[in-house]
Image 1 (spheres, rainbow, N blue to C red):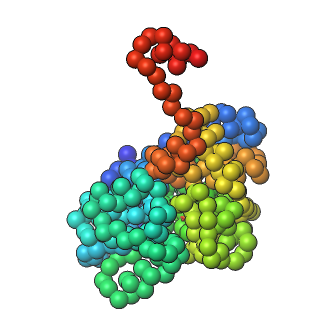
Image 2: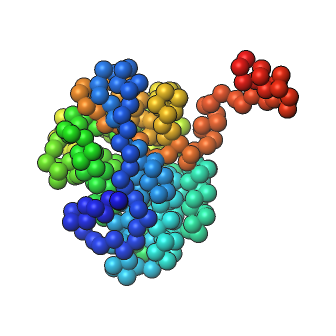
Image 3: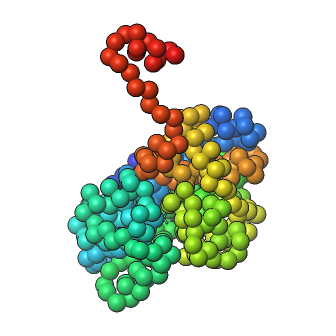
Length: 330
Ligand code: F0G
């Protein structure tokens, strides 16, 4: 099973697919007890390259193939780059990704490089990278696969279909991290097409919260590198989705994000990346009622550096029973 089971709701044929979508919808008993809501986790880290981007990429790259493209490109905080690189490899297209130098998680960089994409480290941030690739594709016949591409939105809307099909009744609210604002736009479209209207609660990192402040942020900063974005491309659509669903856009601090990140891993057994934990950080900070789905956008293995920084240390041990006993039981 993959998201292509919703093929009649998608604008292209699956010309390139890695089996994306159909990700686990996991009940979260500990978070439910803490919040009084019925909390579910939509674990998008279970997609082929470890993030929700694959939903959009299978559709966008299928469309690019149909249009005869030979190369695809994106600006990225890491996950779009990893996904674009994988689908380019699979489709036999050239792939180029532009990422902010030194600001993407190690796993994502490893993925983009292993898939054979040309990885360009920009001495600038994501917003500058996106501005430059948009100019570049005006001059060259390269397909842009950022979420400004409508086909990305089409693919990503299937997550909302899956949630509705996976629950007896649709959720009352959705908690979702917001960066470039493509994903919240996609969920809104998906719920709309399904004929339901949960409240959409978007969460940004405090140091990268342009939608919360109502103005672009020139130098966005957050430990959640995936959402280190100061001027979201889908600003209007995201705000429209939030207001029309009677939801709210709010900020969570890095400390709150990291706390939720640890709670998810250590209490629910679900390891997501820091940006994803912003959805749960928002739920824990602001609360929500009824049936609540938190979107966990990317896998924890994407960013081993932050994980090891946050986790307790390993216990060194000599190879004898007494030492092992003490190390294990002590
Ligand atoms: N969570 C993760 C793990 C992400 O990688 C992103 C975006 C988001 C949330 C926010 O989604 O941008 O649609 O609002 N990552 C993009 C990238 C920007 O380049 O990988 P959004």
